Amino acid sequence: QVQLVESGGGLVQAGGSLRLSCAASGIIFSINTMGWYRQAPGKQLDLVATITRGGSTNYADSVKGRFTISRDNAKKTVSLQMNALKPEDTAVYLCYTGGGLPKGDYWGQGTQVTVSS
Image 1 (spheres, rainbow, N blue to C red):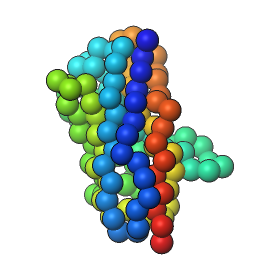
Image 2: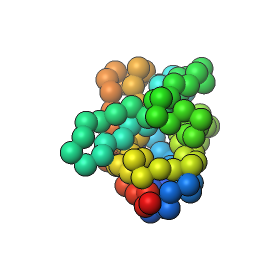
Image 3: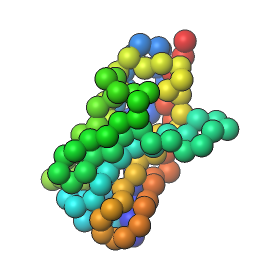
Image 4: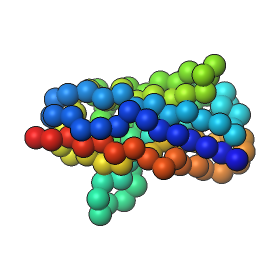
């Protein structure tokens, strides 16, 4: 059973920083693509960042230069360092895995990030 458990969300003022972490189980972590999505109230689920098994990263234009995704294959964790946060970054952030084993795309339950102006 695939499990993705996020932590690190919270309330922060604009310009501040947060670090999200996701612990994965039930997958072959070292071969899976890992990532983060977010969903603001009343809006669709949007890609934030992904990192492949080889370490290649991809970011949404809105977070480039502010967010950094990383993975630790030994600990089976993926992290998202978020700097220079803006009120428009407010959303539920969900951990993602896919492109590996088991087949399919999976998301965690999410962690709330709220940025006050």
